[in-house]
Amino acid sequence: MGGKRDTLSSVEGMIPSADALFCDARDDDGIIKRKARHMAEATANIGVIGLATMGSNLARNLAHHGNTVALFNRHYSRTEKLMNEHGTEGNFVPAETLEEFAASLKRPRTAIIMVKAGAPTDATIAQLEEVFEPGDIIVDGGNSFFKDTIKREKEVRHDVMSHVYAYGLQCPKAKGIIHLGATSCYVGDNTDIIIMTEGLKLVRKKLVNVINELSKFADKYKAQPTLAFTHFQPAQPTTVGKRATLWLNELVMDLEDLDYVLSTMKLLGCKGTTGTQASFLELFNGDQDKIRQIDKKIATKMGFEACVPVSGQTYSRKVDTRVLNVLAGIAASAHKFSNDIRLLQHLKEVEEPFEKSQIGSSAMAYKRNPMRSERMASLADYVLCDALNPAIVSSTQWFERTLDDSANKRLSVPEGFLAVDGILDLYLNVVDGLVVYDKVIIKHMMAELPFMATENIMMDAVKAGGDRQELHERIRELSMIAGKRVKQEGLDNNLLELIADDPMFGVTLEELQAKLDPIKYVGRSREQVDEYLADVIKPILDDNSDILGLTAQINV
Image (tube, rainbow, N blue to C red):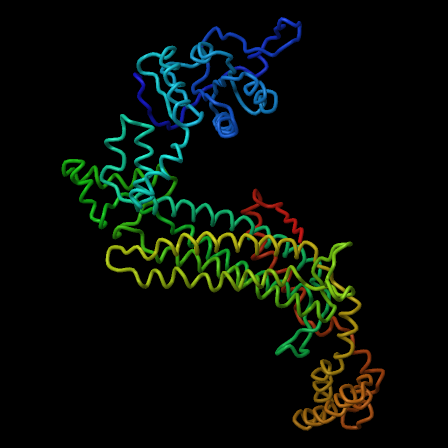
């Protein structure tokens, strides 16, 4: 060991239950305390020193992954707190002293220090050296002292080299090789790919949950007739559920695009200053085979299939374009949905959630404004414009790299993700609480249905021997008369009465009224919904059942 700080991979081990690690002891006042039991043998395969928020979470995470974790904090109350609140989550070995801590660890011992950087870390290392042995490993898991980074950045005006400097202060024996042969992009670009990949996974989870919630709505209202609209003019009827499948299908297309981009995400790897790997050729004494293996090992360690096969200093900025285009696609789909909901709410047919005490307008108390749908549209507008940023950046890169991408992508990429996250929360919340006013829908249907029924009336008249062209012209003339009555006089639609009175059609008013059943005019809407949900949506939901169940609470 000798004070050397090393890095940690993963280790595994087993331990008795947490209860077996404690015994009761009375302090001088007779108060019973839980005390760490002196272990007869070392059972922990890794230890954590410093059990504040980061340290305790790290210890729990290690335990969740099958490790037996020794615990030490200079104030034993923190150790007790962790055991009392989380002791059942995994295998822990609490210790009151560093001697007990060292004794509980299997050899070679591994301890991760999670205390304040600087002097506290140095003091902890010095104390550990007294109870550890040569070959044991001490990992400085704390952050570099941020003031060191800030001070250096003011001097050198370079963020990565400022961090390298600060790391060197914390790890003096490693200072001479930190960042050797690497570039800023070796650090930043690989990190960006990891962050964007994880971000896409989070977006995907919410997107699938929106699809799930919207599919429930489509199924519930698959047989509810409603007017369809072309040019926002009443058209041949559909069903509320069938219209919902149109929203659904766009989200499915977005999911397909997202999954494709996720499947193609590759790390930059280890390419050097201009992508030639020249520095690494020097570091490894011209060993071509070893250099060829570097990228494979980096990809495997980071959980990726591969690194990009060729690059300049950076990964191609077209990657950012592809990612933001996926986000823009989701935004566009959400915008379309929000447009339709706002128009339907104007018609009083479908309404977004409106809470019991919600205020719709500061001036007009009676109003119920579709504010969540409007917010979706607003954020979607932002994302659609934001997607232009990486497109412009990627098209204006010079040769192997130029730095005019940096400040732009640090804004456009994370803000695109944040905006889409908000959009999907709103989408999920709105769909979960959509209100359908079926009586209003039917009222609107019946007002327009005589016009919708004319095609069937005409076909029946043709079957009875009429001339299709002549009948078509006559229906057009009568429709104009009925339309004028509705629009100019504000009276009911009397088209059926006009047709019944015309001998050309040879049909009674009673026979015509029998045709005014809305369900007769929706075609295969219900069947299409059933088929779509079964053939397209169900496989998606079955494949992603483990991530379903999200809800979104919107407070404003």
